[in-house]
Image (cartoon, rainbow, N blue to C red):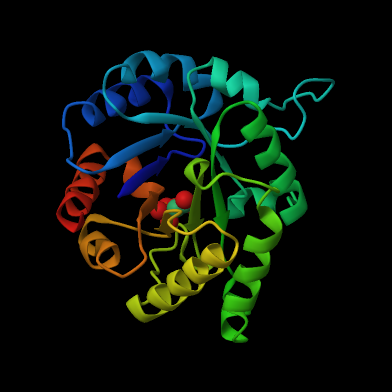
Length: 243
Ligand code: PGA
């Protein structure tokens, strides 16, 4: 089970220090936790996480190794700051920064080149789901967002229906189960069987156990609830029971 905390553009640094201290106070057997803090916090978080077993990741990287790209961050820099993973293709980046599947694949290549593992996000919009196109859209995103030759042991997929992110709406167990089964089948066809598939979108303490019990759900990508130490711990405890 992998439980990942996506802090997005939160919280203030003083609160981040307290939150990460709370994270490190408990261990959860069989649960690999990953923290994706804002980039300026990485070095600070790396020091706080030392010896905790919690992995650190960046929330994005550029597709080039270096150069004149104001405001961007290279995968190698994330690694130098203590990250071992990078989150790519989150729907907030696809929507807010116009990131295409092809760009996500190029970023993933750069991340692999720099020695990072990749967590690649896919997920349909509400309109796509209502038109009955969810599986087709997600399948295309998966196909095009993966870089050539990505090794299975450096890849995690996060399925996050866009309409469930930050809205309090959660996909039904049937919807999650069907999508995870289809993603799992597609990964196996690509020679990537066994790659963990996380669910994300309004995962909270009260729904975590039932979501994590669904076949082919290998963990959760948690946004809002990861900013509350108790809520995040409760989700990790649910994962520990689901292992
Ligand atoms: P949420 O965010 O848990 O707040 O819905 C999940 C995500 O965007 O990764």
